[in-house]
Length: 538
Image (cartoon, rainbow, N blue to C red; front, side, top):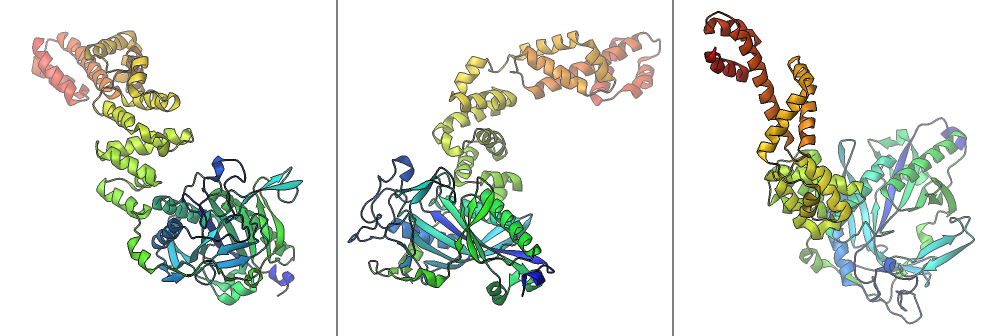
């Protein structure tokens, strides 16, 4: 079909992902070099094996294989009884031996799935395969980007870091869906304890995208022939969820514009230039045959059968979310916040062991996480201060400090200045205020603001808020606003009753007649009771 004919048809974006995840192991996948490459100078954590020097032999890292088995279990994938490593031959400027040790037709995991929710719609994304391989080194382009740099530097510290490549079926129909998938996948990997999302380059994405005539997409499924006939573009160098959504949104628009102008889509590999927000052509798209796979002769086949039963995985995010809703009676939003990471979920459960779950959820989900996010911090940054934060919640729970002061003063100074709750409370004078002092402050606020009293009895409820603010100011914010509100309303009702009594005293009627005549003025049972008692004095 010609490009001119394509212009007249409607198209659906069809997207598949190849997600490269760095596994959290102490050493590289085939040698004993440390994986902590971001903490040292370039090219200082290398050895003959990860540099690919002649005669150097790889030795497989057991921890990497166990991590791969955990991924397979979490994705409900089939885990192979036996797997094999291959050499993927290709020119890699950041792999000195010019081939990558990977897995070809015997991946360690296959046929899995992962549930995602997009705009309230929950569905399954099929995982074609997940296999182990080694990471190449890293390139730094000097004086520009990949196509304008004056020269490029290579750092081999990362070369040989264990990677898990997770390949989806072409199940995505929009860039937003890919972002939801990547977020969910990262969440699962973090729960497994095999992945650190804070490490630079720990998750990288290659996205394959085609425009398929909409009439060939039936309820989201696509025939193999339709996929085969569509030219596929691969977008590389995507390093974030947001970046994936932006890169694919750009690429969908680019391809649609090309079709509308009567141009055919080239099958090619493109680079995502995040700084410019565009994709640029790198090379023609390789076919599988171009890699010339053959078995890695220095690594024997790997038997995985026994590990499938012995390697266990923890409670995963969806299951923990559901348990939180049932066990702690949390709403959906709070349960989602409190299970956003395993560290947050663990922190909450530790707090909920000491306090009412509703109080624990409010403090962790709303107060603590809100303040941490504002400071670009995480729960892991305050792990060693757990007792300080639970002590602050205890002070609020026992009424020794107001919720407002705990949230807006103590918590913020604890995070900003690394102070203890006691130090903040002492320096700010925020301890529990004496009850008599509160009563005095209420009396003074009423005496100083007669207009507010008149406004209240005229039906302006904002007058109470104003008076509460006056009392809080007089007590240095240490009084409980709820208690102050209650005390003020009682005093205001007493004032109203006193005005009624003055009217009664000016009348010559019997008490019961007076009460009946003025009962239409009673706005509350409190006022009625107050008047019945005090009218005996008339």
